[in-house]
Image (cartoon, rainbow, N blue to C red):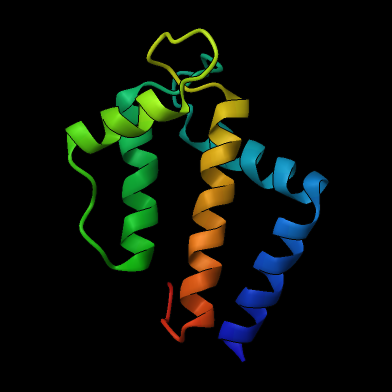
Length: 108
């Protein structure tokens, strides 16, 4: 039942742009430790570590985090991730989590 509730919650967030924006903002604000409005490499590493811990997989390396930042940093190309760029990552992480739950994996 717990897994079904998680799947229902994730589907609801992914299907509703307002809920997705709210979830992304909450996640962004929780990892934007210096309140700069941008995420640097260490803040992104901390965020991804939480995600990989939930999936019980190895955390990313510094070079993998830098690759992800390079992919997401579509605005100023300043090596920092804005809230809008971060939302793309949140949507991808929620989608991956839902896919894993659908396949029967128990995600924390």
